[in-house]
Length: 371
Image 1 (cartoon, one colour):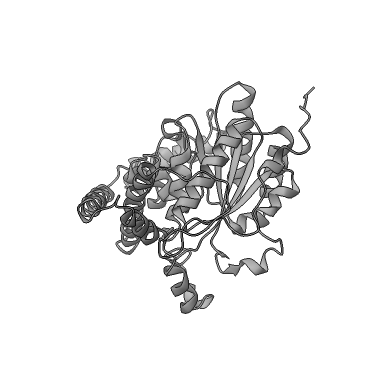
Image 2: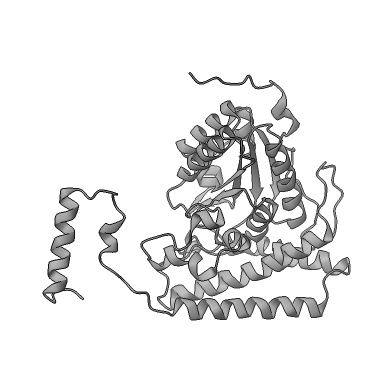
């Protein structure tokens, strides 16, 4: 029999959505008056975040170029969402796990995953490209919202074994319309699974605007309906993002239950290189969000505080360019392809049908019919 600890009726109310997204920086990088209760990150941590954002932006540019060179089948850019992803990655401990979507490559890079390995799935390899156990990062998930259930179950299991592990589950606004999202939130709330649901609300589920998906005051309010601590934050404000994620990690690790964080942001580029975003959004809308670019926002803020100098900025740019060059070189190395891999990892004990198929391919290779 499963015994469920009674949840304090008001525990989640310690973490309720603000009326407006939490914001500490104006679009030009100057400070704004804020009544938010979250502690602001130190300058040292913000400088490290800036460095990761510079590398993330350059990685995104290089990955987009690789699609045009035929090295990637597809690439979903996350330009404009750097603050959301990198703040989330930097707030976790080494013992914590991430459950990302296909668009969260910058978060994975900030977690330390080799960039060539990171793009393995999008290059068409049979595996996800990296070792999930080594980095504590689950494979990037393409189906909407299924990773939220994986994260919830994993977090619950870790807690049952007495481990101090948090699961961070990424999703977009479109995923909040999926049944898996609601099932994950309900289970996490009832069983107090130590999981953070980070909803990157970039305004569109491919081409479907948010207004066609939800009439809720905010997506973070959906967490309140399940008795989950929730917050909404300006996802293009790096200071606010890190401050809210710091508090979310602290809250969940203290055993107070899950948290939903909605980050209001914007996808600057199309859904993928196979999408034409001009068919469903206007140029002036994009221009408005470009003026709220999280990278230039943090750049201005740190420069104004005397933390970021021209010399340091140049060093980071050169380092990011070197990483991009290494990525290009790595992706241009032809992979050894073994047809046996099609069958080797499907089942621990192959079925008769699979064995027949494997033998047929082996015979065709031996006869020179395949190469």
